[in-house]
Image (cartoon, rainbow over all chains, first blue to last red; front, top):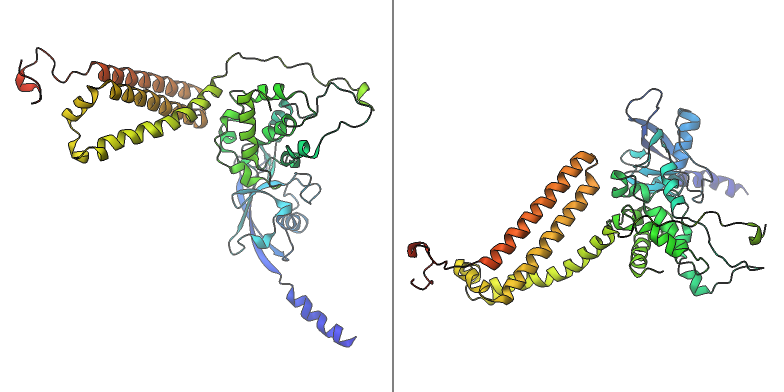
Length: 250
Length: 149
C-alpha cells in the first residue's frame, strides 16, 4: 500500500503540463472597426484540445471571447475555425500536435460575414445547402423501409459523413472571392442524394449544379479535401458530380 | 407520421437556361488541352529535333518551306485557334475568380475577347496568305531562294 502511495507523485510528474500562447483574432462589432489580434497564455495538458484552450480563456481570463461550440466532440460541426492558417475543428485538434514553440493563431473561418470574434454568419452557407434540395425525394410510398443493397449504400457512403461545419467551403479560394458559388459542402450534400438509389430527383439536382455558379467553378485546388475534419474526399465527390452532369444521370 | 401524410416539400424546379456555356467551356479546356499536347510537342519536335540544324535552322526560309505544305498550314491553324481560345478562356476564368469589381471585370473581359479575336484573325490571315516571294516586289528585298522575276 505504501509503495503505491509513494509512486503516485511520480506518476503525476509524468503528465507534463505546458504553457502555450494563443493569438486570437478578436472582433467586437460594437467597438472595433477592424479585427485585432490578442495574445493569451494558457496552461495545457497533453490531452487538451484547442477548444479546451478557448474554454480556459473564456472561463478564467476573458469572458467576452465569443465562439461557437455545441457537442465539443466533432459531431455537431459548430467549432470550425482557422487554426494556424488551416481550417479545423477546435474540438478535434490537440494543442500538443500544433507547433507550441510558436504562438497558435486562431481566427474565424474565411469567406463568411464576421459577426464577433470567432463567430461568422453561416446563413449564406446554409442558403446554398438548401438550394441543392438535400432531402429524399421519392414517389413510392412503401409500408416499411425503402430497401437498398450494400453496394448501393456504399456508393454515397463518403458524403453521408458531412456535419456541415463549413470548413471545406470556407477554405475554398473560389468561394472567398465569389460568395455566389455553391461551395464544396453544398455539392457534397447534393452528391449524397444524387447517388442514392432511393432518390428520384437526381436530374433536378444535376440541373441545379450545372450552373454558372455550380460545379464548373471548382478549380480542383483540393483545399476542401484537406480541410474536411471528417476525411470526406470532397474534390473527388465534386468531380463525380461533374461527370454525372456530363452524362445527364448519376 | 407515415410517408402518406407528408407532401412533397417543394414544387418542381423550373430550369432557367437552355444552354450552359460554363459546361462547354470546361469540356473545351480538357479537349483542347489534350490536343495541344500532341500539336505543341509535334511542332517542337519537327522544328528543333527532326531538322538537322536545330534552332539555328529556323529562319524565314524554314517557315516558308513549312507553310508551302497544306499539312503544316492546318497543323498551325489548329494550334493557333486551340491555344488562343484555351489561353483566353483560362484568363477569363482567372478574371472571373479574382476581379470582384463588376465594371473592371467587364472591361477586362471585353479587352480579352477583342485581343483574342484580333490575334486569331491576324494569325489565320498570315498562315493562308503567306507568300515568301510576292510578285511585284523588288528583287533586292526578296529572300535569296525566290526565283528571279
